Image 1 (cartoon, rainbow, N blue to C red):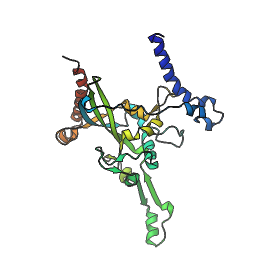
Image 2 (cartoon, one colour):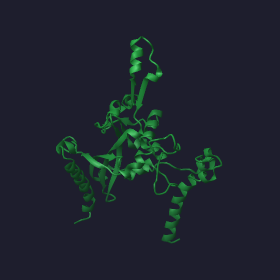
Image 3 (cartoon, helix red, strand yellow):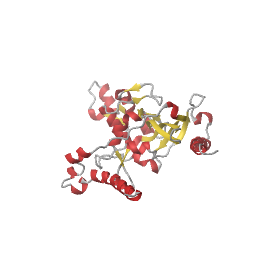
Length: 296
């Protein structure tokens, strides 16, 4: 078999696997059978996230930590944001926020932390107060003043949903693998960012990080959850693949530095244009490093 035929066979195998997994859509006799996995499919399924290879310390020639903000208003980042309304869509499609919160609540993901340095591990109970706001209406206070029990319909509950997520903060590790002579990127964690739940109805406000997810500890869950592939509906992409392959656009807002990893806005004040140029300068400096490796 020549090289051309070998490549065609390999591509055929890669393309046939996702189609086989979605084959029940064409064979379903009832809506419930659309996404059922047969015993034969389950037996042949070897679907798991691609494990990271071991990297020795001496193979890391150069490295840098970066923090990025991924704005969900940008079209390229839409697969991380949508769908925000889950009432009229299939159960197989959820936003990244819904996938993570459900997995944290169920205990499938326990690697959540209070900051991007992953020093303080927290639980779902610790973040519940930041996700839910409970308030009493004026009629409820009237009942309380009259010594009556507060009616359920006079208690308002506001929850942060996927709709309220404005961005994600990503922390990643750029490094040069000298054994392979290649610049690589390893995502370490991410944090959903939204306004304060207590002031969501008051318009513009400063965004806060709700919690940080240790990405390597969440890969199994994110691999099972699929994001929408706008180019081919029959081949959805997993969130694990989407994030690992950097199929998103981010703006660097911090890098590790001698000034305590200070943010760009801390040394460039009140000038959004200069902050963006500084972010691009950091990004280009990292990219140019790989090119410079091959210049003599």
